[in-house]
Amino acid sequence: MKKFAKVLALLLALTMICGLAVITGAEEAENPAKGLKIGATFYSLQNEFTMRMDNAAKKWAEENGVEYTGYDGQYDAATQLSQVETMITQGVDAIILNPQDADACAACVEAAAAAGIPIVGVNTMVNSDKLNGYVGSLDVSAGEDIMQFMIDYLKSDEFNIVIIEGPMGQSAQLQRFEGISNILAKNEKIKTLACDTANWSRSEAMQLMETWLTTYGEDIDAVIGENDEMALGAREAIKAAGFDIPCIGVDGIADAVAAVKSGDMIASDFQNAEGQMTGALDAAVILVNGGEIEKEIWIPFEMITPENADEYVNRY
Image 1 (cartoon, rainbow, N blue to C red):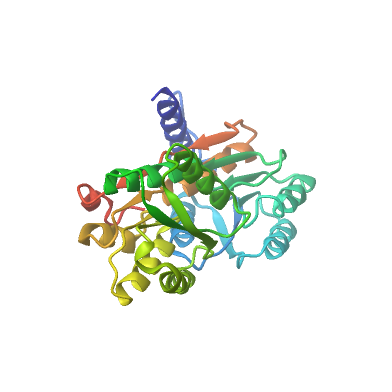
Image 2 (image 1 turned 30 degrees about the horizontal axis):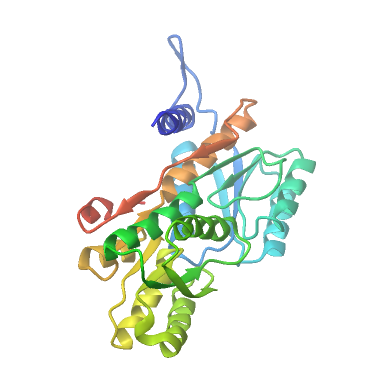
């Protein structure tokens, strides 16, 4: 609780600094974000969660008088590096990085550091000690949350699962799988029948699930999706094949909230897209103005269940 209180206090401080005018004594100072030029590269802008982050950035930029541009990295680290180089050429004051690959996108950080431009990571991590800061949620905990929730839902520690993963090598995929594995290590009677990536894609997950249903059929007791898009795709395949297998995901996107409300998904672990993105932008402004930030800022996941799903409708 102390850790969460510290995180929330820091985020509140960041919001007060960059979302509002700074008051010093009786004099009102200009918003330190006003007039800045900030760019962001996302691993993709083809899924709801990253689009939520980009939309939150656009809203924040308009409110703070910032020139903002978001780029679609198209699930390609080389494309993201090219976009970072473009931002550097255009003279941005700061860069927000949502990397496709934890290792390959270290080159983005190197390029920004060499140009003397602050770069803040958001949502997915990158392996570079030159990153100025990171705002996200603890993906290991999300993996643990969804696996434990499924165990509690089935009221059993002996059943068969399939696991649908995100893009291989991305930090969220690695860490959510680590969390799932942590719980499985404590429940050795749970058997993983299959595990493969669907790249955060609903359509790819649907195709993958169709294959697994053909192979394993009624032997599958549960589906663990590392994000909502994939869990929803799996459910489409399951219903089309005439099965009723429980699915769980991560993010709390609109369709997932509706699915939890209707009983089509058992739960989703909500990830605060707006909180992460505005936190990263606020941190970038502090850096541009010569201030210091925490190296890592964590925003907790929140489990969406049928009991509380109404609270997450239109929440981003």
